[in-house]
Length: 183
Image 1: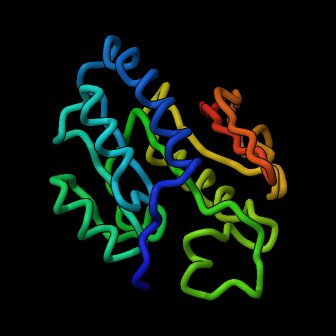
Image 2: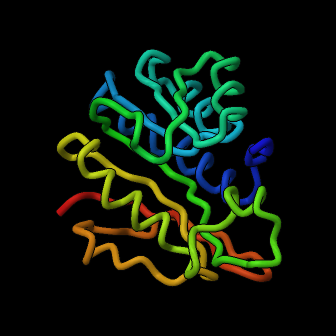
């Protein structure tokens, strides 16, 4: 796997929201612990750091070795991990700009790992949410992006209160950014 996920509309949707929300969270918790699953090129790690989260409290992971190496070069703690396989500890905020498109068998295998969330597009997000509960501090928050091209995720069924906090309408899909809290 050689490609990393280059920031696109979804990455910027997440980063703009984080710029607004993180300073408010830091007022209540100056020692905020942050985890990004699927860090890619590290755009959100930079935003989190610039928003005031202590570098030693910023953690990340990616399934792609090249992305891990890149984020480490940026000075962030990053491990190779398939979702939470190699993650330890609990976090106040966990974000995931998950691959969310439904499977397109014509798409090259190498890029499918970056774009495809499963046959329906939502399977990876569901797996993430099932695992994330063990890594979220009490009153912790998850930020997750979904696409109108994928089947909806039933957040309530997975044990989460959900609120769509931002969206981006593109000519072919609607991206939604969700704030999720455990019931």
